[in-house]
Image 1 (tube, rainbow, N blue to C red):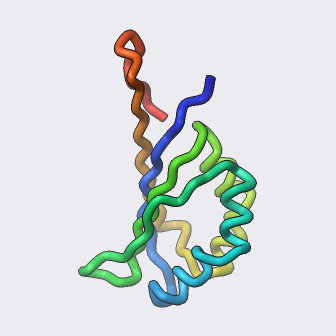
Image 2: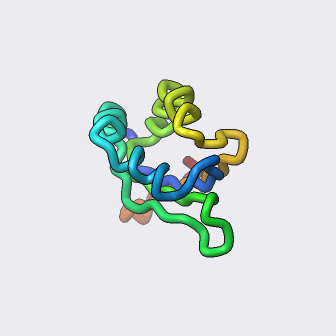
Length: 103
């Protein structure tokens, strides 16, 4: 059984946050997220560097990697600097006999 993962990504954009957010919030992006059962939870920019973005998603384990593989070129075409992308993944279980594992 696949677990639900909450992923936290930070990366830089070569545009403004508003320009990037308009694409992230578009119907096309929603369609692409739904294809991989990815639910965006939050997106914002750093107070110190408005070109540094944070995005938080929930998704089945492994789906965010599939999304990036399938959509990396599309993301880069919207001025996302993929070389700056950092990811952390978080899981939770209410089953005390199961230890939390790395996603």
